Image (cartoon, rainbow, N blue to C red; front, side, top):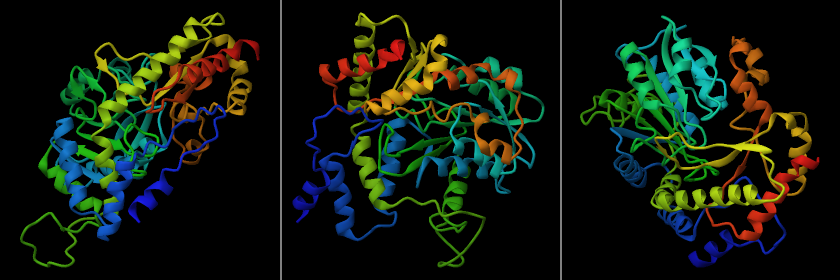
Length: 407
């Protein structure tokens, strides 16, 4: 019975027509088998497998404390609500300022708003697509009490210097590492720098459990606070001796717990992270090489290269069109999509262009967001699969991308 179910789940598409998706089905037989074991056990809510994943993840990335949640977005939410919680020493207050990169995902920004803090959208570095120390120094004021830094698509900026600066100024650092699991900066894993750090196991990320995420922190007090906030505000798993052993609520909270099946699949995939990183890097280099060796290559794009101190874990392949092709961008992307090359914006583009910015009356200075503007107007990205690309596919992809000159 188990073998029959697995066969159905991993049935392959025999259609050999060219198709280059943003992400592939990265679930292996073993991943699904681990999930099936959980279904057989009937223990669907978080239990032993979740704790096992948390411990393995913590040791591998050399984190102080970490805790699994139902998404990377929930990890960001918990980080911000921990910072404003009455139990938090030196907690933040309503209206305190938080710097956020304007090239961001919605749930890197909205938890700042939801926690009652004031976001200040700042520009990013054109080379790394994330904020650097110089930009932070230009934007920090006496009101700045927190910084959200996003490690973009496997890359980062001078995060060690940012951390030193934040510590000196007594500013909290939230490290959104949802897109960069496995990257190392100066031989230290990204996600280990922030006071709070978030990770995502969404379907297209470096490791997937379908949905799911992890939050890391530095201190035991913060860890216990996060555990309380994750599960309704009660003290389950917090205190060995509880006054009321059934329902004892000691704080506010949410229900952001993961499923046991997500932990089982995520743990099994996480053990293959190094191998998948290597293949994605191979595919990235192969695509770029095929493009640059083509007779049609005339520097139509620029590519995304790692910071000099970074060993990257690539998520996708971001591309910036040369400025002379900006007006062709929409037509070009339509052409790629019609030819089965799926594309998307870099994160969500410059977030100041999103309708919800006006809805929440978030202030920004467009003149100071020139790099974000360039990334938004010129940028897009394509996927990097975790199986090695053939020469035929890489060549076809390169040919389609280089059509930008003729559209």
